[in-house]
Image 1: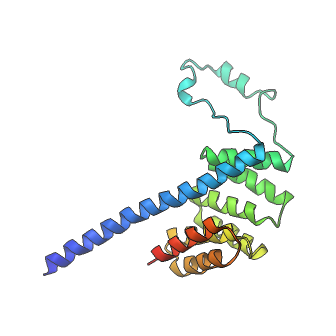
Image 2: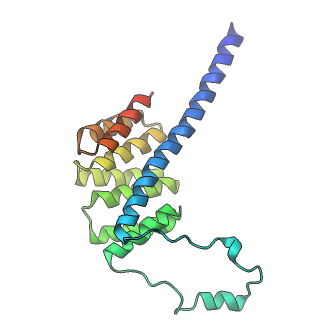
Image 3: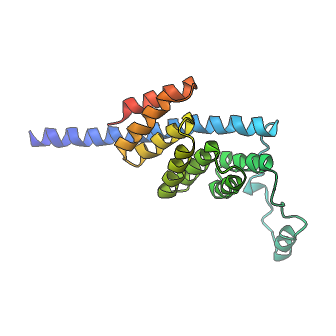
Amino acid sequence: MAADFMARDKRFWTLLAIFQVFFGLAVFAFTREYYVQDAETVSGHSQIANPSAAAWSRGITATDISRLTSPGLVEPAPSDPAEIYRRAEEYFVNKQYAQAAQLYEQLLAHSPNDAEIYNNLGLTLFYLGRPDDALRWLNEGAAKDAGHQRIWLTLGYVNSQLGNTEQARVALTNAMQVGGNTSIRESAEKMLAELP
């Protein structure tokens, strides 16, 4: 009987781990599509992919590196908020989360009450493996604009991934109750139903 219990217990934990992986990937795919759409809206055209590392010659010299880092070739830091946002979204889409986080923080100086920027920064920091910082920014953004539906969804997702079930439940319930985006509401309902 104990062997049956142990076998069932292993199956349960294995299935739970597989579920968590697929759930996380599904949420990432959902939120990634959102950010890709926003980036295209801001820039007005499709993203341009960066060349891969394989495209570089293997014979790069110190002279080549110094030429590439000369002041004339370094991309200037943008000062226009729309351009900063476009670049931040581009970095996010390309999974260059450290660069995206820096630009989102810069954007907060321009728009300190914009919950969408808090949402983007929080999610980016979560993907960087900085969950405490992510929760701090997400909670601050939700406090600034309690009617921003997406930040509640992201807050629910991050809390659920960290095992903060009750905080996830509260945030996802808020995501279902505020705002009119049906897609976000449905995602929140699905995540809420899957909480333990």
